[in-house]
Image 1 (tube, rainbow, N blue to C red):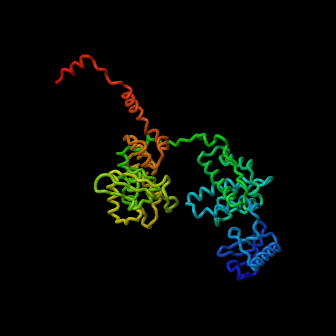
Image 2 (cartoon, rainbow, N blue to C red):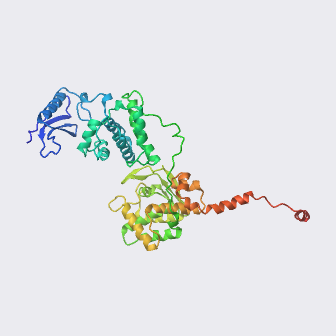
Image 3 (cartoon, one colour):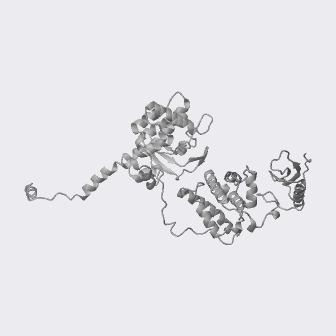
Length: 454
């Protein structure tokens, strides 16, 4: 049964429309009566167990419209219906805070913040709350985003009923939450950088409530004494340099990439840029002709100012812009590529025939075929960057210069490519021995020879 829709729109609030009550058949949640209304262009709805409840709620909306009340953009209900700030649940406050910050964040930052807040909200429930639904975390990852969906009605109802009010946050409670934010679901410890990110985002959300006067004081406790002074044990992700190709093998692999397929020539040039310039694949796909300095002879240069931060979305490189010298071999390859396609200064160098970014999977498959044809060890696209780093280190390039070209810190460089530095011990020993060995003493015979010499 569907009650005929009627629209009531009052002149003082022309962007709010209230529709009739509808009955939804086959409702598994036993809330078949729905009130629908719109605020601006956004449709809203709320379900009820009985028709009387739905009619009362709809009547309240009509009265609010006729009285010219303003409607809250977040909830869609009259602003006068919203709870006092001290009664706002942590779940709803987190939604508002994310919506406030959203326009200023890059896509990666948004995903990272939602992940952190989803963990934070899931840890803050009222006393005596029943266990949350199994899909709570997944639901929060969707519903916390501005305009996000609510995929799990059970999880949404649990949050509405059991999410802790903001004014009940206390230092002992948040001290426990701070500790649990550093743990995985299985109880193991998260990576220190990940745990720090979760804590930083969650505290910023609470701190905003203090800045706006919703909370009188910051309830988040300071870190335990000594934690900031202790260096967390870092997991070293070293590269197995023994399986990386040497320069002659990499040259054969790059040449073998070109085949009868038109896209293969694109992958050849892209792989050459990764190896000879040490760029990240995400930086290669966003290279523009204006970023290249390609002289007729000698070394050139690439100004790395963009990277792919989401699929085909440009942004700043992971470690910031940098300038990378490139050898004559790459200068020649890029010059031929630019001349063959007649790029403009702002044109992207590597696009498909449809104008999209080359797929990483196709690039990887092309590289696998080339390595197999060259008899080399199987490798990923990113391994070409590792091969560049080990080539430079073994050539004796100073650590600081290699780190600068890769966009790394020297600490990260040494810990990642420690295997490439193994041969430096013998060289270092020889140099130290020479420095410690005193010059040979002059004998009387040698002095007499020097005195008699004309």
